[in-house]
Image 1 (cartoon, rainbow, N blue to C red):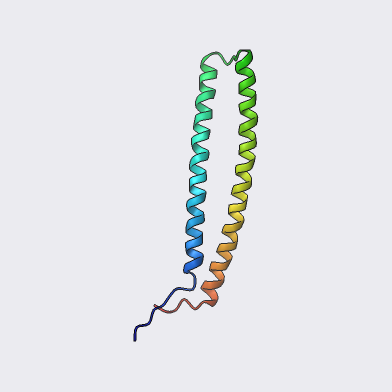
Image 2 (cartoon, rainbow, N blue to C red):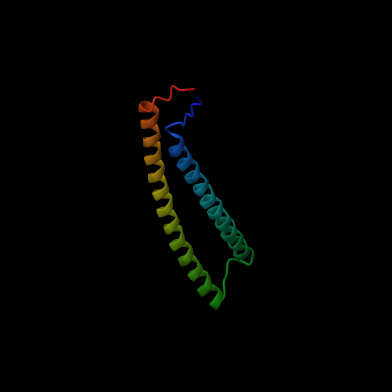
Length: 103
């Protein structure tokens, strides 16, 4: 008779792994946007830091869009942190009460 042991924390670990991958992807996207914005800023500074009429309006609009996006990303990160805390608590519970002694 074959015995198949499944770790009680396997599901929580899989969820945690998926969540961490998602957070890493979000962070990478955020970094790309930041690098792009820094490059745009460097271009503006190279031209004396002066933007003409329509460029100034576009730059202000872009700043507003980025601030809105930044706020949304912060909320998503906070949500992900909350889910991580929940998963960590579940994992801790499973480690303490799930036995985890089977090899």
